[in-house]
Length: 321
Image (cartoon, rainbow, N blue to C red; front, side, top):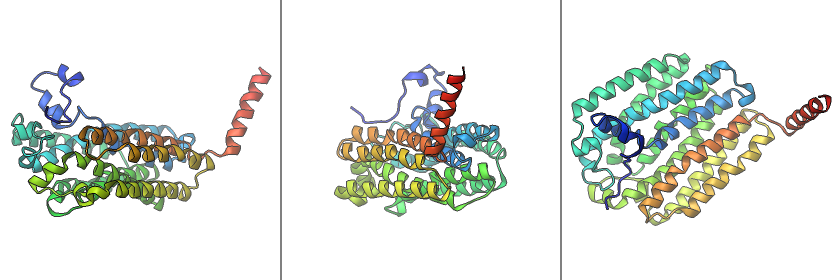
């Protein structure tokens, strides 16, 4: 049986037949990718607003813009990646059925869709602050160069971390209209998180990559991958705690950080690097980690005293009624 992460069933199968290869080219069948792009941006917005209690209408509007933008730009990034890699993808079991590699979509058709997505993404970007617009334009250079990294460095996963987590910088700057050290701490957390989960992801293709001459941290670390992923995840948590500290977060945020920490520990313990399906399952679970961190950011400025006061107010109102 061919190992592929393409999902042509479900809602994708209900699209017109001629649309389905384009949806798959954008990885709309695999939503975990846009979640992983989106969530650091949402962290930045939520932390910049001092948690959910400080969110105003403009912040919620940003959350929606970032959601739409993440889906569009993740699709654009996948097209760029597949245009670069269409010859390599033919040699890898998991990717040989992708629309460009299999010939379902031509390079001209993919380029036309890419132009349309980039145009839509730019229109969304214009709805944000000047700092965010500049960061978004800068990120395009990273998006364009990233697919080439696996040819020249053993660390393409690190370059993906630099690329994907621009959304953390953009989320903070969109909410605050400036760049601060708190955003850089979030960026660091996202960088090490991506370095960890994409190393897990790359283990699916370790043998095919070796034959095709593709470099990755999975091949670089080999049998020591569990150790290094654990280190990267530990650094993720350190930088998240640093971001909370720099932003003046309350004790509740630090307490809730236990849950994403446990999630990452569980990933490392359950991960079997020799099982492609297990690698994909563990990789996908990172959406849940990102949602745990979003909860931490939502509660980042809650204090124990504040929660006690809230409960007292509720009890007082209930008693009065």
